[in-house]
Length: 436
Image (cartoon, rainbow, N blue to C red; front, side, top):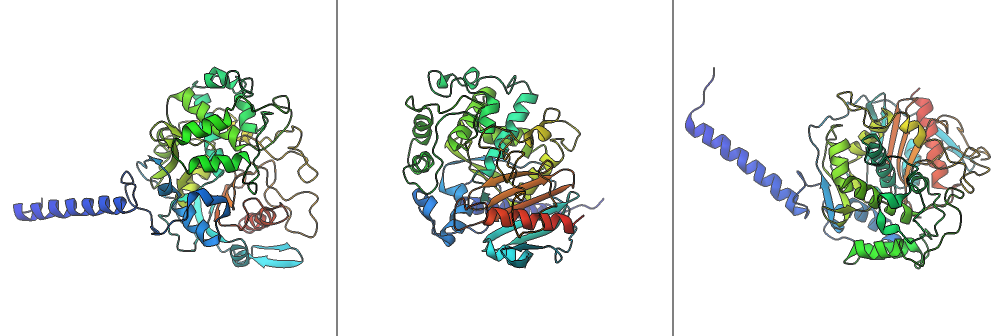
C-alpha cells in the first residue's frame, strides 16, 4: 500500500479546498450560488426583461441564455450524472426543398438563427452544434417547451396517485378557482388547451394577456400579479370545456399551479426528485420562480443545457423508464400525450388528425403543403414536438429512437407555419431519413 506524508496530505486537502472554493466563487459570479458550476458564457450586459417580446436578435441570444439569472429561480440539482454517449454520424446528405430552393443543414442553421442543436439517435449523440458563443454548459431558456415538461410531471403525479384522474375538475386540487371561469375545467382540458376560457396569447399586442403576464414577471409580487390576471373573476368562458382548442399560457400556468398544490412541491422540486436526478441529468438547471421554493411558472421558464434538453427527450422516448427499470409514468402515457385532440380549431386542412396533445404539438409537414420536401420522415402519429416561441424545440420519435433538440433566436415569436416551423419539419424529416 502506498502511503503519503502528513505535509503531502495537508497539501492535497488544501488543494481540494481551493478548487471547491474556486468552483463556488465561479457559481457566485453568475449570481446563482446554488448552482454547482456557473454556466458559460456569463454576459455582463443583459437586456431588460420587460421588453422581452421586442428584443432584437442579439438581445434574444443574450437574454435567453441568461434567463436563469434575470429572474428569481429555483435550482434543480443534478445527481449521479449519466452523460449521453457520442457516436458522430454524417448529416451531409440531409437536404430539404423549400420555396423553390434546396438547402442543407448548414443553410438551415444560418437561415433559422439556430444557436444550438443536438441530434440523438439510438441513445447516442450523432450531431451537436453550438453558436453565438453558447457552450455545453450554457443554460438556455425553454419558453413554452417548459409546458411539455410540466405535462410530463402531471403524468408522474397521476402514476403516484397525487392526481387521481385527468378528468377531475381542477377545483379539486386548486380550490382558488372556485367561482371563476376555470372552476369546471378538468386537468386533461388544461393540458389540451380546451378549457374554453378566454385568454389572448397574441405576442405582438402589448395589451394581450400574454404581454400582461410578461409585465407581471418584470415586476415584484409576480405570483400575486399573475394569479390575479389568470383567475380574474371577470374572465369569461367562450365555449364549453373540451369543445374548442385555443392555445393558452394562462391555462398552462394554472396547470403548473394546480400540480404544485396537488403534490405540495414546486415544479423544480418535482422535476429534481422525479426525473432530473433519477434519470442522471448531467448539469443543474434553473426554473423561473414566482415564489422561490414554493411556486415556479408552469407556462415556461425551464432552463437547462442542450444535453439535458436531449436527455429529457430520451426520458420521453423511453416512456419514462428510469435506468433502474422503474416506470415513472402511467401505462401508455407517452402515446396518449401525442394522441392529437380533435376539438374545434385543433383540426385543420394541413393537420386533419389534429395539432395538439398533452402540451405536445403535431408539427408534421402539412398534408396540403406545396413544392416542399421531404414531406415524409417523421410521421405525425409517432412524433411529438415540444415548441417554444422564437424557435425552441424538442422532437421525440420513439419508433425511430430519435430525439432532436434546437435552440434558436427567430426574428418573430410565432411566425406563420409556412416559415420557420415548416422549415424545421422539413429539415428534421431529412435528418430522420438520413439516419435510418
